Length: 232
Image (cartoon, rainbow, N blue to C red):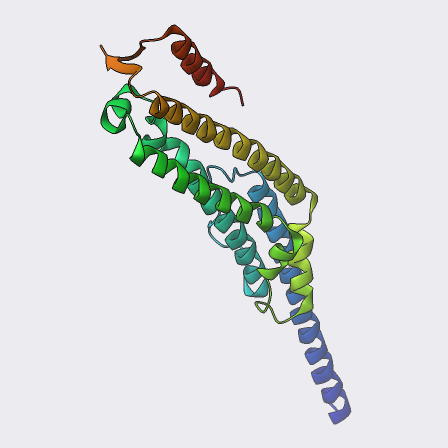
């Protein structure tokens, strides 16, 4: 075999191997991009009010960074939302208008009113943060300086702005508005009731595990406030 033919074989061999490697890289990139998009669809089906998003990473390389960043953003939001919602399970909230609390903290309700003041402030501050997190600029900040190539940053923004995510964020925004209105209403009315009882310390008492009033008009006012608790 001539030297020229040997060189041609070597060049052809190198070319074939480079083509195979290049083809494999392209295939791997396309596979990981597809896997990432499938994972985003799965994430969009989850419930931010009850689920957590730090699930196993399905991709590698900078795709994994994009995937991890998306899950970090969603999980941080879910953690904050679930912390906000936990107030509805707090016994100090759920039992604030119980006869047991009327006996324990009445007639001035210093501890309960202080609890509502602090809790409502924290709740609304956290709700403000959650609403701001839905802003595009906040979403973009999560990927800043985490990837080296603009392609992956654009991919992150594309996925976070995709239809499934946008629909999910829209539902979350509606849920936040409704939840904020409902919980604030319950807190506001609870505070009104406690202040009502505080303003009439000698006109009510707890007897046989129920509140009793010395005046029918005050009793009616109290019942109207209680009924108003669940109107929103």
